[in-house]
Length: 531
Image (cartoon, rainbow, N blue to C red; front, side, top):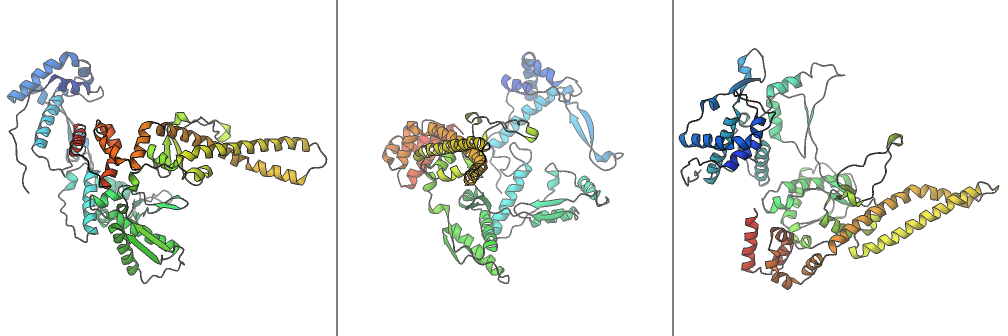
């Protein structure tokens, strides 16, 4: 490994007033005091008075290498770890320095870190004692490397060097002692511990548990595979799979795709015809065929209910996702986002309904955005989800008239019932019809509420699609690319504008349209200036 080249010698620079003032303003009253017994909150309140004096002392210390004696004296507090409280080795010391010393420490730390990073230190894969890094991130990176190599048919070797000393960890002995205490309890009081790995358990974690002698815990996995989002839609909900496969060469998601399709065949029979279009689809098909050969001894007793399976790479058609969706459901997704069949909207745009809880008590309306579930269980949404948005208003108006007429008819039957109750002869047909309408009242009320919800959503969409800017974007997507290319300079005038138009830029490049070098360089400058 080649060590980074040190570009310049390290020298402390003088601290500026705003730096010290910022650190003083971060102090809190509740923090512990050192031997000087000066509450941090007091120094914070006096920041305007003491800042200049503090700067003089700190800059003098940095220049001479001499720290005031009082600042080097700390209050030591022993914190018990585990084991016998009578053994001094079972305690770890906590040092509480004077607040002034801690401010000096932070100043030195910032300058050292800045110097190290400027010269290529520390390594990008060092996760300890670094900002925006964590043990969880280190483990994630490590497991990703293992899976990537495993999927490529390669073996991975690793050397673990005292990881428990690098990161903060729970005391294993304390944890095991706590768990072991459950074994001596009666069956009625004994707790059963289960570890579930999602989506699959790993040999590495199982061995670690064995080393810690956690033998009485149930170890299992929960293969969260295909999630039914609607009556005819199943999804793995792996949003980053395209990036992982094409940018990171991480094919782990393909393993889950193959597994889920094998599970589907277990439930609905072996699919006789399977076709694959694209490199990734071919990988999935190969894995499925291999799994099928491995399970050759186990015959699927379920008669096939699916005739054909088509596996298609997203890479086969990169243009379609870049076009603005113009259906009702598509525009909701474009403007507000649909996640797991649920969209969030500004709650203040919807009428507040009084909901009754147990005992007839009024329930408090939940705070935050209004969540609307969008699937085929909503009859109105099922009818309009695939309509072009220009036709949605007409459909909603027609549905409003139908619901209004149904309520009027039901109200008329209710009035007729009062009259019939005073008559000796009742028409069985009329009474039967009234019973049917009464039974339909809850359904009609739900339909009315659904109509109000989707009318409000349609109004919000219209407000965002009426402006000329939105119409220009649609014209660009529908073929007027020359006008689009001529307006690059205007589009790249700001970061917000650039980011909003990136799909159109990608659309033009995929259509083999050249972006002028001058505009391309300008776009680069806009991006770099805002990073």
